[in-house]
Length: 297
Image (tube, rainbow, N blue to C red; front, side):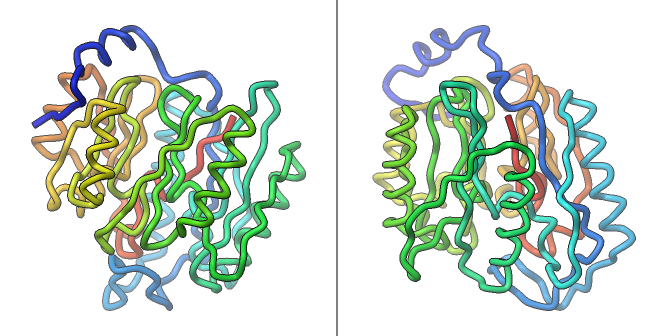
């Protein structure tokens, strides 16, 4: 059942006719040429299920095609032998464009050291393509996992920032201060279920006034705060574990690995067309649509 703050109709009416800002017209991805599961790095990984690499490549190509079909240009970071999870391109950075129209990127510091070399590879790509690199001054204990935990709201003026299993409160605070200086509001959200270790596994901006969420992933006070800011379209834990919230809403479409009855009802009511893409090989590693890309200006 849809939940909302005290005035959900006002939220809907105020945003009637809005579409996602034109700030984000590309996705950055990395081909899974060296994708494997030699190391379990999250509670959703299944080491007992080996990766079928030819199938993974086919599934990834289909996702890339889907992004092109909905009007997004696909840019690529070269794969690298030894960086087996580099294809999960959301984790290494947070990208945006400031109010003067200048693109910028905040590099991540990941929990797992096996993934930290990926950050350097992505940062070099951004530097070559004219992005301003904004480094945070993080202590060794502080972690920030990019667009796994940092999601632009549909308005393009505010950011949902998850912390708990991966990104740390101090890192989120520093990120929020930086974004505040740039004129962007950051809404901090505490994640409490370790199976939803990234925000993009349990929340996605679906429409100008609405979020698709799994409410059980959040601390009670966080859930109340979310509902004050947006209409929440809520799914079950079972659906969330099928990566239903790990989709991408863009240009009137929702790219998702599963279309449950509940999700189909939500999308139909919101006038959003589903695009279903099979990503079984990547789900073995704990990620799906949103985890395999980062939206770029």
